[in-house]
Length: 431
Image (cartoon, rainbow, N blue to C red):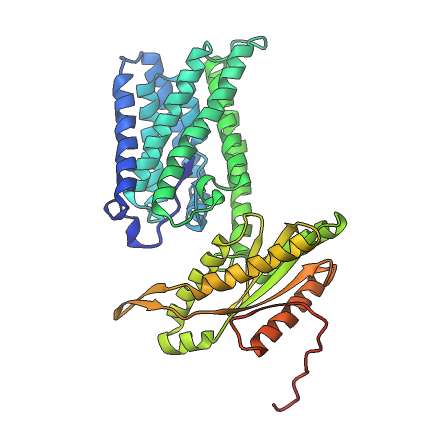
């Protein structure tokens, strides 16, 4: 189930959050408690036994996957999707709200002890996530009950439709509640920050579907539920491999794509644009006089400035634009799917100038031993080139953009220049 990512600073402690975020967190937790209390009918002994069985299955699952989940939890950059939904969703379908909430609490208490606390996740996040899952489970339970309960046979279309709707509602409730807090605690979060990536949500839905199958098995042939464990463990490993691949493609200092990963994605995108006879552009940006920042304030402050510039660049372009760190103080942006003709050229130039202006207006607050220091006066030189005007391959367009960057530097820095038929002097040896 979706959760907030690990903290980076102490500002993520509950009382350090913005007041509106604290209000939302406490309101959601109070709503979860009220929901459980309102559904507090005395459970049957059979339901209690089923709740205990689901809890045991969850514990076994977590113990078998603990090592993998600790690695995934530490590697998560934004939202994080654990795979406990297979048991919490099964509990939502099979049990009354109070017992389902008890199973969820037990599942997340065990996860906290074995995975989240070792990964140094704040307790208030764990409690909030548990509350969102309780409310999501309650919504799913209500839908299935309204549709007549679990399917009783192949012809029970309403039961199957009820489970399908319960899956969607379970995901929707949890995603909205988590996204609400991210919006209130983050500066300009992207869509992926709010809801996770496509792959993340696909894994989550697959896990919940396994939970639905587990519920149906427990309702008819309980022994078959053991068949859920092998595929869920394989899913753990598949998700870990994908997540580690993502980490390996990310620049550690800025969170952008590293040079190799950017070139892989860029090459693929430029080929697609060329085949479709579309238009794209490459911008290379180089921080002017960045060495002076490192020399004056140290490399740790320089790293903070790089991270701030990266965030500014990422927030100033479209979701589909590909932003990377090319090394040192150099960044690169690929703008695919631009309008054809003069309109595309105009948009390319507007984006380049907007990025230059955004960096020039930055004031980066950094922590130093002497207190908070604000770094200003930053600027970038920008070189740009277009596909297919300046080249049909990524390498050709990069060379053209790099030549334009050289001109921007030569003409005085803090400028934008675009590819033109110019001859770049070759430096003489010894100079």
